[in-house]
Amino acid sequence: MISVVSLLLVLALSMLVIRIGAVAFSMTGLSEEVASFQALSAFSGAGFTTEEAEAVLKDPARRRVATLLIRLGAVGMASSIATLLLSFVGAGAATPERLLVLGLGGLALFALAQSRAFSRILTPLIGRVLARYTTLELRDYADLLHLRDDYRIVEVDIREHTWLAEGAIGELDLPGEGVLILGVVRGDGDYVGAPPPELRLRPGDLLVLYGRNNRLHELARRAPGDHATQREARAEHLRNYREQTRQRDEKGET
Image (cartoon, rainbow, N blue to C red; front, side):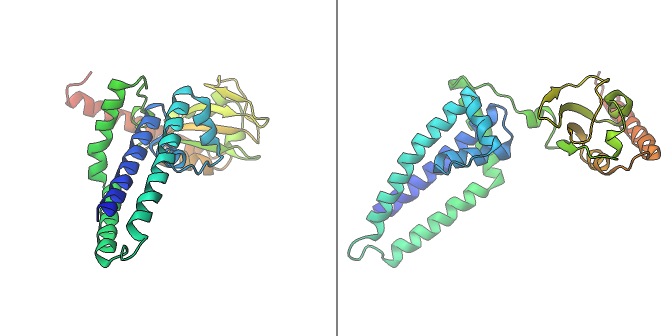
């Protein structure tokens, strides 16, 4: 029975290490979803070759986190296999009691890992510990840009004969609709960050946009010459701004 408890303890520690790794990745600027996936990938040694993985390797802080996760993952896998063999190899080892304890323990750990309440308690605690005892810089862009609310960052392809391909960035006046162009990936792969108003868009370019979710989806589908929708979008953005200003004034904010 001791070997079964030891296996559950190893699994619990492995899950905790993965969670710590995910929080550490998020502190370097990765989104929560990407950070969780990369932490699991590094710990398990899966080694997925993706652009996200390349972004991890290019950053020194992320590379240190990934290296530690890989090393701990190798130890964790070896320990899990060893304790599993001790639990179920040998005469009378695989008893119903041990199977029951292992099954219930595994379900409990899985439920705990999926618990949002537990995550809300554990994640800030890990973040504070890492911020205090490591050199990782906390940059939670999801909170900074309110990406957990109604705001999003999306990539929109510019195709021929679409509204976004009608002229220069300044002529589109997307800020008037509450949408910012963070960057443009040209058709040849060059990236233009914070593009100037005179930059002309071409079919094959990729726009990196920030704004409200519904407006971004509408922009991607807008037909050429649909100026009525553009005017309505500007009016909606102005109404939202005035409403937010009114609410701040009622709260006594400046």
